[in-house]
Amino acid sequence: MKRQRRLWWLLSGSLAAAVALAPAPAAAQADQAQDPDRPTLRIGPFEFKPRLLIGNIGIDYNVFNDNDNPQQDFTFSVAPDVEVSVHPGRLRAAVSSGSEFVYFQKFTSERSVNRNFGARLDLDLTFLQPFAAMNWAHTSARSNSEIDIRARHHPRTYSAGTRLKLASRTSMTFTARQSTESYDEEFEYRGVPLSRLLDNETMSYEGALSFELTPFTTLSLGTATEQLRFDQAPLRNANSLRITPTVTFSPLGQITGTGSLGYRRFDGLDPALADYSGLVASGSIALLLGGRYKLETLFTRDVRYSYEEDLPYYVVTGGRGTLAVQTFAALDLRITGGRESLDYRALAGQPDPGKDRMMLYGGGFGYRIANRVRVVLEAEFWRRTSERDQEREYRNKRIVMSVYWGALNR
Image 1 (cartoon, rainbow, N blue to C red):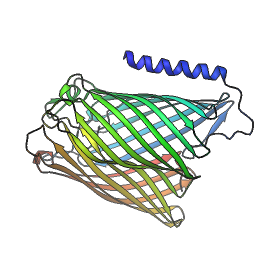
Image 2: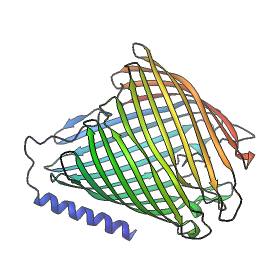
Image 3: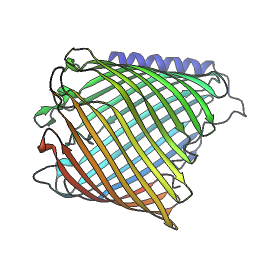
Image 4: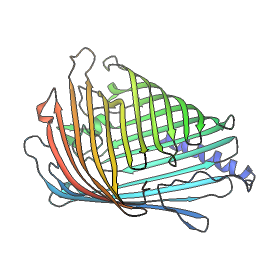
């Protein structure tokens, strides 16, 4: 906690000093690119960007992802959020806040109110652009596809750094980031207290060289060192090195999103924690094809810690895609498919524990009611198989409707 305060106060003091010394921007200086995913309301010097999602309205046929006794329930969620920003001189300050109200009709234990808060400061000194950011969340959403209970946890991230412009289309970025995650102590999964094995703190230092290939495409080469520490489970402590080329597409182009594909070396500090060295990837990329087709993809491959004491981590590899085809007017048909594998790694010297696999398929349709109002009705079918524990296997289906307001419809 003391290190968090030192990092934050150091950045705040640096930005305040820079604001005091910075001259006013030239009138011809271009504003930062606007985010088209939110409608904008201007009141005086402030910009308000609200958004609302009423989601998952329908039936979950296996609320607890249970193998033997699936239970169904009616559910829905309401998630409003807003971003407020102001641009005094060369400084841009933005805060965002949102909540998610999750309702289950029969299983009241699954109801929750999830909250998140973020803040960011950016200072434009032409060639030097320092920044600082923080993000907090208090959520009962499932942490990942391994843990099937909705355990209350609290991820927090503090970051600070600067962007240095080397040329008109080339820049370097340096970032220091501290992340923590903690679980409420009363939550156990399959007899394991989640806080004891998953509460952690990560300190990372990152650098990236970026080049704007086109007005819509940026390529960067990043490297990062990470220190992962578990106070209650020191056997899981590790250091990590990442080298990740990343491509970023402007939200105004035919291709949008970000994708990275690179290398990670994960070194356990305890000899009993097996090392990992190999491919990592992450991204979310959408393609607009011929005006009628839109393909949305999501993919990941990385090391992720497990709740199981004898299986400290697994390598998750997964991806999903949704193809939307506009049929006529504002109606489009949607087809979804995905697959994810959890390749568990045992303690050093122990036999290979095997993999769990998740498969998803489904479909539905979307309808644009107005410029930024959209309704989507989908059916999803899930199946998990396990090479090591049949009790972890399940089948589930969900038939749900979602209503979006404040998202770009293209």
